Length: 339
Ligand code: NAI
View 1: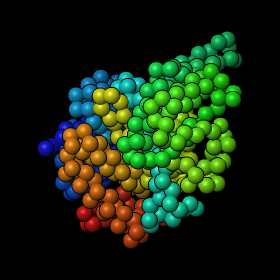
View 2 (view 1 turned 30 degrees about the vertical axis):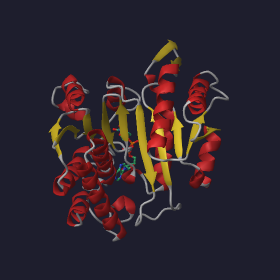
View 3 (view 1 turned 135 degrees about the vertical axis):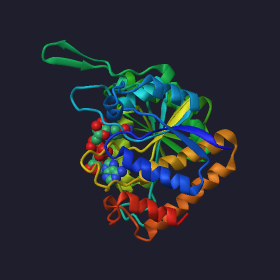
View 4 (view 1 turned 60 degrees about the horizontal axis):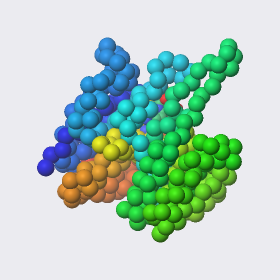
């Protein structure tokens, strides 16, 4: 079985890491045929919308996409392609696994965390306005429907993956209504449907302090949109940085796989980018296809890729962000040589 998927190279380092990742997937015999579609600055340069309808339609048709990072201008300009894509396709659950890798020394050992982020509302509702000159307001939206949906998804995921505990990070002491709804829904799903999975909740500031003191006390972290964005990068820092932290955005009708990091304009075009986070996202995509189609061959390819990059890292074959010497392409070749 060959699956069709959309590939969005993205901006900045996106095209470099996408090319490296696709070369590894091809060499590993991944059963996926990619159809390339633009989004972001790359789409604008082609005279298209920043998030073209044709790209959205292609993802809806194939139901799976591998996406490079897309630049969002700061303080003005077009709204985020990444946030827009998640909303338009209703990709409500972001999953970001964070685990220590042999050959990537960090302050922490044996980190094995999963961040689950509600992807469609919260402060990323995009509802901002100037009330009067000099006063602006950003609306934080929390609905019972979206909070209940992400809570149910998180508990289902925990059960499927045999994880033991979910911790909700929130600020319901201050945002009593919005974060209150988020926390309440998690408690309700736990009580009514999943009492066998432990549920804990923490005010996010204290939670972050505890996280960097001892990540082993946490398992799955569940939170709303903005907190999930910030805490994912915090967790990435515990295992070697953004170059090793993959991600996926799941909806009822499809999934988009992308690294947690952005387009890294500071190193774009220099062959310095680490393609591993996108490769690990592609590994998640293969497992997703394996699960969806009960196709163990997709899982086997994913396993082979994982063993190859783990072997390369353990042997010191790494990009500069991890303390190594290799360029983006050299790292891809090192992984391919170990497949
Ligand atoms: P960033 O994640 O692009 O970069 C932060 C730092 O990490 C930089 O020093 C960068 O060089 C480094 N870095 C990131 N990925 C790396 C990799 N694969 N290999 C080696 N080093 C890596 O975050 P920044 O600079 O805040 O954002 C840049 C742009 O990316 C912005 O326009 C932002 O909106 C966008 N962005 C897009 C995301 C997406 O497409 N999902 C996610 C986050 C940011």
